[in-house]
Amino acid sequence: MSDQDQVPSDGEQPESAEPDEDLLDDQADAAEDFIHGLLDVLDMDGEAEADITEDTIEVRIAGPDMGILIGRHGSTLEALQELTRAAVQHQTASRARLVLDIEGYRDRQRSIVERHARAAAARVLKSRRPLELEPMTSFERKVVHSTLADFEGVRTASEGDEPDRKVVIYPA
Image 1 (tube, rainbow, N blue to C red):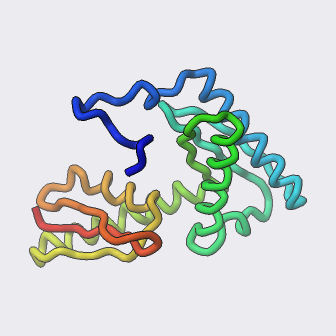
Image 2 (cartoon, helix red, strand yellow; image 1 turned 30 degrees about the vertical axis):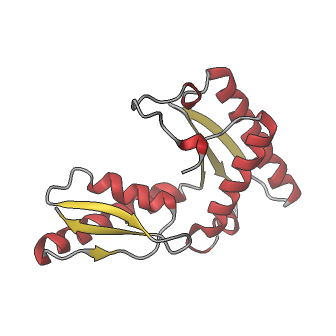
Image 3 (cartoon, rainbow, N blue to C red; image 1 turned 60 degrees about the horizontal axis):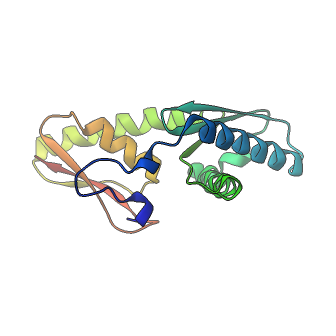
């Protein structure tokens, strides 16, 4: 956990945990500008649109032939998201929470991961033995944890180191 991610011992979020609206607007604009610039350099037709949800900037990219920006199993999308986050943080001199989606890939992936997580949890309930899932991106691990948070009879934990970090589902 980095210093920026630590929560005070009293359990309250640090003041910097809730960026102000102006900062979020600046970060959203910076993310859109970065993606538009990248698409221009790559000579790709496409649009980027950023929305702010709570304290997270969600950037959706749409256009023809965007599959190359998604990559195999979303690996290029993950790298592009980190690159965009770094550019936004550099430009605004402030930590940015950013999620990038291309042509609805994350929504489709979320549905697949949710179904897989529920099926795996059902197997754990039946066998009463822990089940280690395949390595996943942080996005996919978060989906598994949130999907199974209210799934009675199991609990989840992330284990291992990147890029082989995975979720283990345990009987409760």
